[in-house]
Image 1: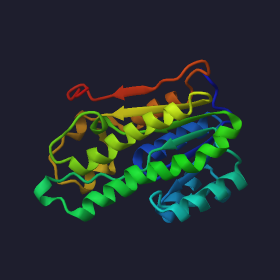
Image 2 (image 1 turned 45 degrees about the vertical axis):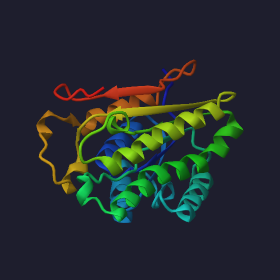
Image 3 (image 1 turned 60 degrees about the horizontal axis):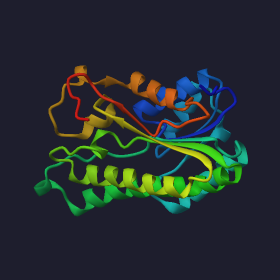
Image 4 (image 1 turned 90 degrees about the horizontal axis):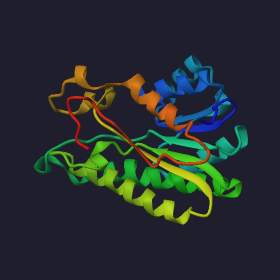
Length: 238
């Protein structure tokens, strides 16, 4: 396993429940962490709690190209080229099709799929120059299996999987690794705005989900974990 001490890691979606738990683990392992999220207040609170300097935080909406450009300028200026990108940014809109608006659908595509595209496109030049790096995305199980009411969400997550598989083909002559983490239900704020009856007590805990990402950040240099699946015992869809 590769050591994280001194590793330069960019965490997008750092203010979410999983993101916050992950940042704590990475800092405890000695990594140099740069965090981004949409909410400046939450980002500042996270950075303060984790001991991350103001130079290593930048509020950005991953679906907006100018903000991603500014984010990468800040990252390269204050931390240098990231060796690992963890993309935990995203939104979840779960509605039956008859209640799903065009705005809902496009918000899902813009944040989850376009946001991933912009992040990966922005970080790849520095990784290509180094001829190595690790990109971790979290499509979740709905990027592999369908669920009623998840038309917009699954469209965005299936899109991430297909896009990253294609990009992987472009990177075969490098040591840039791509990992997709398919998480099942996680007891996180994700469900707070979703009108769906769920049993949070049977879900994966945020800390356990974060620990799986922490583990993936340390995968051996001689290989790559292309996919990892982590699901609750009571709902194994894959």
